[in-house]
Image 1 (spheres, rainbow, N blue to C red):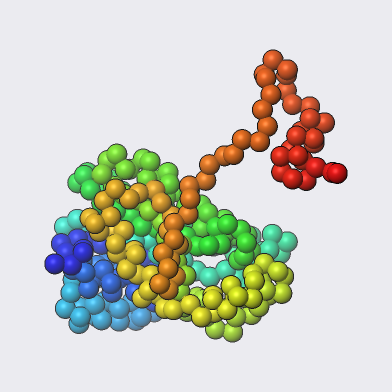
Image 2 (tube, rainbow, N blue to C red; image 1 turned 30 degrees about the vertical axis):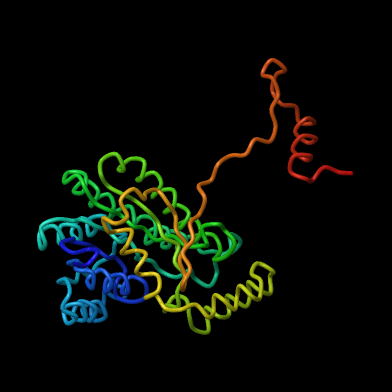
Amino acid sequence: MGALAGKNVIVTGASRGIGEAVAVQAAAEGANVVVNSSGSGGRDPGPLLAVAERIEALGGGRAVASVGPVEDIDYAAELVATCRDTFGSVDVLFAVAGVPAPRRTSILDIDPADWRRLLAVHLDGTFNCCRHAAPLMVAQGSGAIVTTSSDSWLGGYAGTAYPAAKGGIVSLTWAMAHDLGPRGVRCNAVAPGARTPMASGPGFEARIAKLVADGTLAPREAEAVLAMPGPEFVAPLYVFLGSDDAAGIEGRLFRARGGTVEVFALPRPEPLLQRPVEEGPWTHAALVEGLGRALGDAPG
């Protein structure tokens, strides 16, 4: 019996890269899969159909292709309904769909249209699918949602919109975990690193070189990024988090690349300064002195 035997799952962004690897891995573990992609901008469903045919040929779970943009909430409803109506339920949602950051990504020069596009596909697309899948999972008293973030959520690279969208997905996932966990639905996120069409080629290599030149990325880290193994190395973590074997694991952000799996510590505030309320609000001078000392920037 596979880890997802009897489960009916949706994988967005499944025509290539990480989404394709997750869909194939899920089917190999016994799941019936609805694979989704936007169809190369809505024009060419061929790559997605090929993934569905590949899954069917492997003899694991069944596969159905659904072409459409997850950033359209009405289409997201259709996508979730396809899984429910075809297979009888929606047990796992793997939200992987995304688009690469454009060439101009700094807050100084990003096109507002690019900002809206990145947030729409990554953040809105994740929300839309979760918004329609979660009520079905709650009604049946079980389910799992695995979203896709990125190391960029920390803001160190990829400009502004991409990190903002990926950071939003982290917060969305934590919020859903708190909301849905007591109702039997587990939510986790993965920040994957893999050699994919979005993370390879001359353009990607040029961006990495610029990060090294700017001092954002150490040369050794850049070498590791450029030598990352393929998405088949991160797909098993997605499948594990979607399986019943991950019961009790929720509200976590994992980092996976090659043979390494890490987990981000949940952020917690650290005390810096405290004074009796009776002394009144902080004065500017007290903050200059106190925070400077606490953060190691005090003169002298």
